[in-house]
Image (cartoon, rainbow, N blue to C red):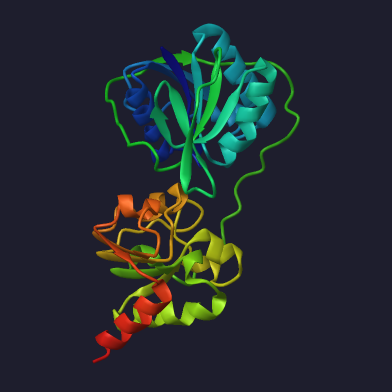
Length: 303
């Protein structure tokens, strides 16, 4: 079984998240080759074949040219699986490659099981196993779903070229507006999820955070609903945190949220659903109505 791993380079640097692709290939028990549009002086420690295209020539992202580079490599390697990260790069590029190959694509893979791949369903509360037919199959991997693996070794570099004019020009990156809340430095975070019920309940969660000397965090649904500012969002589309204490209030535990907080020192989850996925990573799971438990806990701390 062979995988072709599609790595990403950002502002001249090989992204650490690429090492999750190696973790996936290892879990699959597959051999790997890699495609990278990057720089010769910033290559991963990887004892395999690395198809390298010069980012100075092809741009760190150019959908037309990068698709052609990948297709040329597919012709050489004949992989069973072509693997991307579930990122803006993978979201845009994987479907283009899949369409060109007339191949199936599975997006947001979170696990490997029973000869197939696990995908989230039912608002992230369940997983379904999909077994695609034929090869190659294109996959995008949810961030944090697979372990980081740094295999070591020296890659066998194969120069990668393609012809043709690009349909777009890569102009560069626009930095995000600086956040007024830096959760990455907080030692205690109390996060609000959709399970708190309504925006009027956010102050109760914030009060618990204040009583503990911590910061208020939030899950994506709460931020998307306008209940809490995006600066407080924890997860793959928010901030990645590792506080000494993380308290999840009414958060079911979507993989995107878990990826942003699972390295916390001690995790407490408060949820009325005893089977909520967050329970898999929590050190303590409190099965209770969050809006009854949290005010009572805050009052107790105030005595």
